[in-house]
Each structure stands twice: as structure tokens, then as C-alpha cells.
Length: 319
Image 1 (cartoon, rainbow, N blue to C red):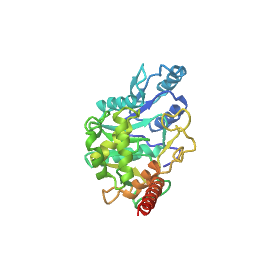
Image 2 (cartoon, helix red, strand yellow; image 1 turned 90 degrees about the horizontal axis):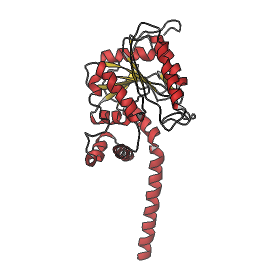
Image 3 (cartoon, one colour; image 1 turned 135 degrees about the horizontal axis):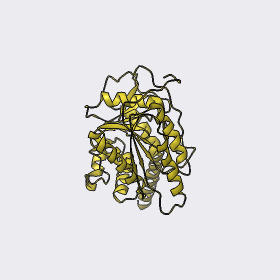
Image 4 (cartoon, helix red, strand yellow; image 1 turned 60 degrees about the vertical axis):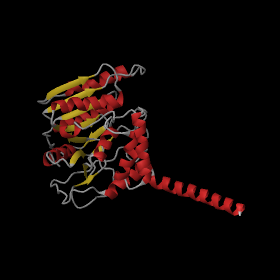
């Protein structure tokens, strides 16, 4: 794409903000470049136990005053803090109460201009294809391309800059109330080929049910798994997460390999995959990195080996 002209999105955009004016203004500038005709801004309220929140939240919300293009603007400005789980999920509820489809950006997800073009194209192409539930701009394959097309399909859901349809969000279950805890491990075993992944996701599910994790996105991923859904992932990274650091909600380490990944240019001509199938190896690569599968597998093998050694030693002694 030319650096002197910017693609103008056809999609409505939801911008979810909180108390980080620095990242908020950077992401807003990218939204401004694409000049959406409809912009929704949802802001969570300040935390009562954080004295700096009031000022920082108000500063972040001043971004609304910088909308200077023809735009239908809607705002949802919370007085009280709902937290990550409810603050974000209710904002997306509100968005899809008003729109059939659209783009969602949080205040730390810096999009390239190509991200908006990609979302527009994918939203239109797969609008009525219920196999496809999610579109992301985030690629965490670190330069590895999957297939010869401009994007591939995944069972993973990435929410660092994404787009979807109301038809998908209607199945979202923030409390995971639809699922029986006694059946979860069995169902995850149908999704994942690796027992350690079954164990990890079962543990996440149980913690979510006990409200030990304050987030909204695991629920979206679990819904995708249990509906055998596909996520569209570009073979070119279109989002840079600029929120890693001490002020991040779940992203604290600035040395994390997912921090500030450079955005790539999307080809002018989009090549579509021939087969509508998930790239299982790409998913396994991501899961291995997220859950340290190889390291845990080696640790388990070593532990099992020690147990076997001790048992054999005991049996010899008994003889």
C-alpha cells in the first residue's frame, strides 16, 4: 500500500479503551487514517483503589474530541470499573447490538492500514460461511508462512485486532454456563492431540468457572473450539501489540517475543486458500509456545523415568 494514501474502511469499528492515553492515541491515529463511517468507543471506568485512574481515564477519553472526519460516533463511557472480563465483553455486546459485523480494536493493538483492508475483504467473503467464525490481523508465526495463499485457517483465536459477525458473538458465553464441567476434559480431548493441552485447557476452564481469571477472551476461544470453528489468520502480521509493560493488564514483560512485533505489508492482490482446513502444525507451534509443551513433556518423561527407576529398585530389593 502507498505510504501517501490510506485505505478507507467500509466496516464499523469498535475501539475499547481504559486508562492508557499513550497507547490509546497511537491506535486512534491509525483508526483516523482509515476514516470509518461508524466508530464506537467504549471506555471502562476508573478503579476505586487506583488514585491515578481518574485522570488517566479522562485523558484517554479525550480522544473522542479528535474525531475530525465525517463519522457517526457512539460512545459507552462507564462511571465504574467493570474489569477486563465484563468491561470488554459488554462493550462488544453493545457493538453487536447495533451492527451485524465489524472490527474490534483494544487500546494496545496498533493496526497497520492493511489490517482494515484485510478485515473488510474477509468480512465480506465469509459473511455467510458459518465455518468461519473469526478474522484476526495478528500473526504469531514469526515469519513462517503457511501455504501459498495470503492467509490460512486456524482453530486458534487471536484477539489482538480482530473482526467478526453478530452471528458468532450471539453464541458467546461470558460465564461458560452452557458447558458441563464434568464433560470438559473429554471434549477438549477431541480438540487437542496432545494430553498436556487437554490438561492445560481443562485447568483454564476450571479457573474461569471459579472466577480466578479476569478476562473475556478465553471464552471466545473455547466457543470456537467447541463449535469446530475456523479463524482467518493473515500470512503477514498486521498488528503490533504496544501494551507490554508494567501498565499492561495481562502483558507485563517488555522482552516477551510477542511484544511490538513489526507489521508487514499485505500484498495488493489477495490469494485465497484452496482448502478450508486448519493448519494444525501452525496451531501446534502456537500452543507449544503458549503452554511450553515440549519442556513439560521432557519434564514429565524425566519424572516418569525416575518413578520407574525407583519402582524397579524396590522390586529388586523385595526379591
